[in-house]
Image (cartoon, rainbow over all chains, first blue to last red; front, side):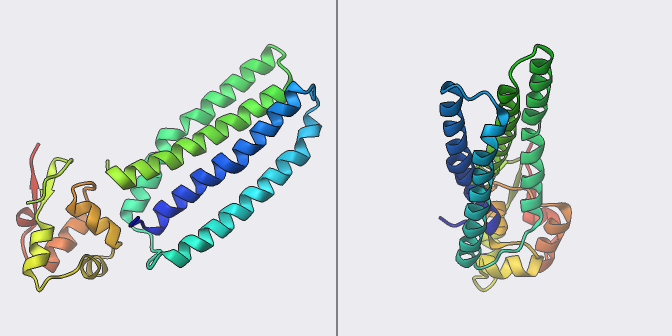
Length: 139
Length: 72
C-alpha cells in the first residue's frame, strides 16, 4: 500500500483504538453485567487500557516512520486533518449533552462515565476513518 | 488532461512525461509537497492551494491556465 506517514498514522490510531479501547469496553460490559456498579472498580482496568494504548501507538508510529521514506507533512495532510476533525467533533458534543441529560435523570455514574468515554472513542474512530477515506478517495 | 473527480482538471502527468520523464518525487521536492500529494493532484483526488498550483506551473514554465482547467 503506497501511503504517506500521516495515512499510516490514521490506520494505526484506528486499529489501536478498536483493539485496545474495544477490549476495555468489552471487559467493562462484563463487569457491569456482573454487578459492578462502583466507578472506582473500573479505574485500574481503564488505566491499564490507556497504558496499552500508548504503547501500541508509540510502537506503531515507530514502525510507520521506519517504513516511510519521507515523513514530512504538507498542505494536503493539514486540510485532511482539519476536515476530519471538523466532521467528527460533533460526536463528543452529543456525548456531553447526553451525559448531562443522564445525570439530570439520576442515571448511574458508571453508565454516564462510559457514555462520555464512548462518545470520545466514537469521535476518534470517525476522525481516523474519515482521514483514511479522504487519503484513499480524495474529497 | 487527467480525468478528475473534482471540477479542476490538470495535465501534470503529461507535462512530467514531456519534461525528461520527471518523476513525481522530483516534482514534489521542487514544489514542497510529498510525492503522495503530487499523485493525488494528478489523479484528481485533491485540488492544491493556489500557491502550490502556481509553483507547479512555474516548474513547467507555463501559465497556470495551461496546467489547470476549471470544468464546473
